Image: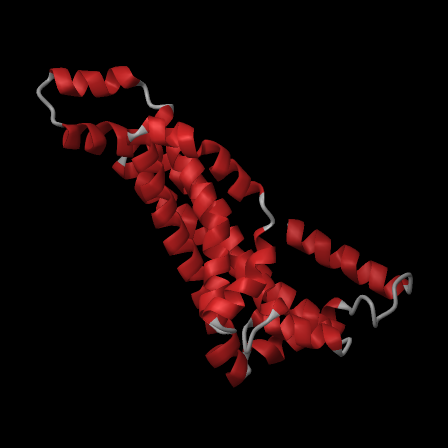
Length: 239
């Protein structure tokens, strides 16, 4: 329903002549270009897989590394107190500025954009994991120990089950950041990808082509959120 309203408003604004077709292409023009794009061999074999793979690596590596570091800092709280100012500084820094040194280090391919994505996602996962663990009721862990449970049992039956819902919610943010980093990095310097297409089309004022890629990104984000919903339901059953 919400999407239909957006399309109707878009069509009305375009038909009214308030905004020129050059600035805001009509829905019909945009979706016609979208249909041609998503059936293009180059798009399906090169550009879409490049962006999807870059975002996937940024999400998986950033999430895994962030959770691991969060667990380590929770176990050694004194280390967290020591590193907290540096973590806060690194998390607040504009990571997009790292694209130049990352390109020098890793080249213009997938690796530099993946590294940029990891620099965005890792701190979100780290802080979420640490915060979720710190919020766990210590009496639950103590009860497991009193019943003869080991530290492995505490982590399996208390800690991990307590933080899973928080990590699922964090995954939504991490996925968005991973996709954002992939596209933004490709727009700045790349050899292929959806961001590369947006930058190239924008440079020649192909606004319909730009809007077509925005539709692709919206659908990709919706698909990823649907997959996370399925993961959340499975995790709820487990916890």
